Image 1 (cartoon, rainbow, N blue to C red):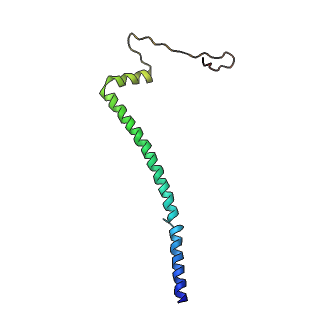
Image 2 (cartoon, rainbow, N blue to C red):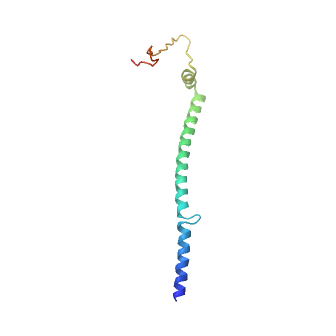
Image 3 (cartoon, rainbow, N blue to C red):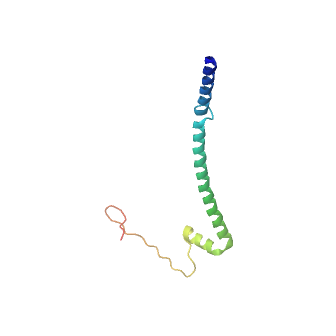
Length: 101
């Protein structure tokens, strides 16, 4: 009976070792769970970025206002009859730093 009990305890210890420290044990499970959560967060950021790009594409294909806004902001285009004013901040003559008024 004593030998049977020792055998069962050894078997239980071996199974516990594999559960806690072995390959695909709880430690690996928790690491993989953290990796999955981080990947889901990264995927959500990418989905949001893609949705923004799709909205911009829809804007550009639906009308000229978005194209006009894009060309004004990114390329500096102005319309016929408009006056363009460029404001350049003052610079300190000695240090070359800009002064905010």
